[in-house]
Image (tube, each protein chain N blue to C red):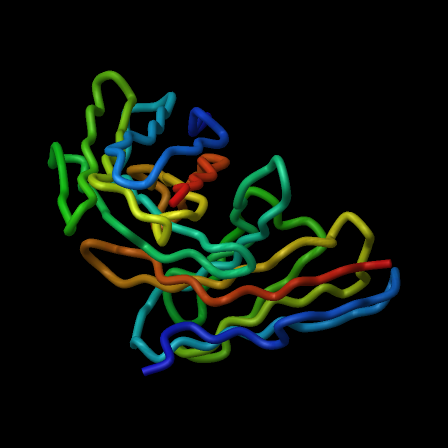
Length: 112
Length: 113
């Protein structure tokens, strides 16, 4: 039981490049989330998915797209990376009551 | 708009001390409140979750309380140990916003041997 896994762990991009961050959970959770964590700003929700096939915007969705391909996987795509997207990205999942969120180890992204 | 504040931003205590971390929120219409621990370079680990109808939750040396009317929660750590050194974050789930959490910026705790 691995919980929530994220790939890659580290990534360096040049401005304008694209990439997809992958997230998978093996806890059979319906809800999944993408957050970014920045110094002085805390964690902020980018997108979330309440169930397979549904997605919704969070606080900071601009510049990102997401795909909930199946119940296990929730990916985050940067179509044209910008230096402002340099951050640590966390994926999380949760289910029902009490709706505790379980987090992955994070992806550290630098955009030059 | 819901805002979550944690004060102080950093705290240093000697080993063995009992301590309290504070979390305040501006909108009392919350569904639940969670306390997380984050070690440097790592993800978040959930410590305690308090439902809006509850006043406190306990796990081992940790006790979290919730006072919705005053918009406050506290995390009490008994007999602190160096292994408790980490950043502690609180987060509130808004009542009508699915599972979305609003996080505070955390308190960085250092427990000195």
